[in-house]
Length: 439
Image (cartoon, rainbow, N blue to C red; front, side):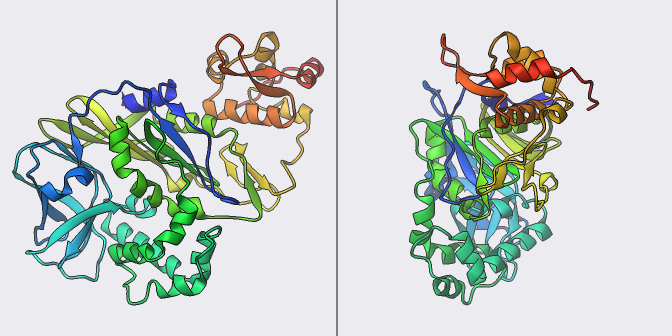
């Protein structure tokens, strides 16, 4: 176990989180992550920035691509980069890799993203963009990768499905969606990506306003109905800028899903992100690759998995994804939950009513009111003063807020957001007794 510096910086508020963004009626949304200058000069470049100076040649085997770095720079290659085959199968690296600044051949482990195409040992590749998030998370297991590509491609061929994903895209017709994929094999991710580009202007109608280009932006956190889907940050805005468009578009399925049944409550997204990150605070780290200038580790926690890259002893990139097992199911009467906290509700109906007496028996409820009775406190202050997890505290705060027992306000001396008891909360505390609740 070892702490990850970029996660620590997020947890300690060294980076700023901008307001949530989503399309109208969207069930997914984004929190932009912005760094605070000054930034250290980069001692590396991205493959996206020097791809004409890095040769990519087929090894003749399905699981390898030969990289030769002729740029004279240390080059970072992101996991999931699309390597579009020219006369051979298209591939994608199963983990990130760093190329040393010298022109030697490095064999990089890849997965095939076009199974029905033959391999040509004399073929080469053109790098561009990244695989969809649903595919990227499966990289490392060839069968899973092929299955995820087929699922994504087949779903996109169904006009109603494309149209549903495209709700809010004013120029997308079902006939366009169906025709776009004619003649493309189900297993051809590069072809699917190019077909999607035929309706790119329409997709951009929905995605063009996703905040990917804030001043000093370094990443994003993406949410769906079940909570955090993924988090990605770089150490420098220039690195994020090189990938921002393709990374945002890799989440297009999540961000263009819409619903007339639910509204997303984004007010507590920051707390949920902190809870998610907290589960990675001391991740299980496994070395994936290393050389004299870099190291890449896989991360694993109870809630998800990820990857962190260090170049010249400095962490430059972090990506995290939620486990599939963390997803919960929809209940007709109560909507969808993120863990303990009900984060969305049926349009117009609000949250189910909670009895204050029943609520007071939940773990941390009475202690929360007791702590806030003396003075308003920040989330981190409450966490330090209460024997509960981040997730439990976040749930109690949200529930108490829904019942108008507490409110979020601003501390006058420094402008920090704090929680305070309302008059109703003060009366409620007088009327309830402390309960001991087992976890």
